[in-house]
Length: 288
Image 1: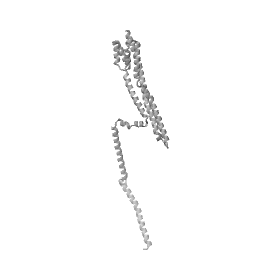
Image 2: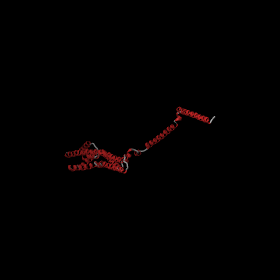
Image 3: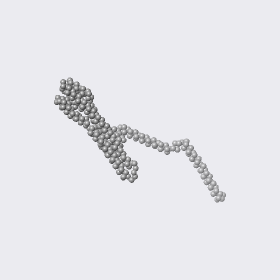
Image 4: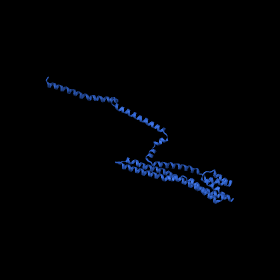
């Protein structure tokens, strides 16, 4: 065999082997795909591993969340309050929220105290006058004084002051009633000046916080190279929160102040009516 023939035989053998390889490769790939289709667990082992890890992580998160919920349920009122939105708003409002908090506490204390005082001062005037007149007719001045002493409230105190001067004439009775009325009025109006001051001061403190927040916002703008909403958000938030807080405090205090003034005016009318009827009853008793 010549050299040319040998070379031709070698090339032919190499070509045959290459052809076999080219034919066998697609067939093996098809067999692998078929095996994967028949046994998807082998083809998706990595995906399943990732899927197993994700539920495990989510399970841990749920467990930690459940534990956090248990802690919150066991926490006290102040702990829950510290995690509420009110505390966050208070912090965002800045330093001026502290005087506003003081105003709200003082206003609430005065409101409760005045409600209790006016409730205790309330009395059935017609019933009281009827008992006083009946006691005057039956037991005299001493009996009427005992009825007033057994009854609480400013009206009974005024009638008692007038009865103490019953034997000194009409002018002295009226003077004693006027003096006792002034004392009782000052007692009824006690604390109203505090409510009135809070109504005026709380919005002013809120507006001062607004000015402070806007100043801080403009300072942040001046210090920043690029202006965006996040830079001025905290200052504007402080401005709006303090204004809203001041108004939230002032509005209920103003409503309470108006209610108390109306109640005191009603007491004044009832005191005048009771005093007038008692003076007439004393005049009728002296004429007998």
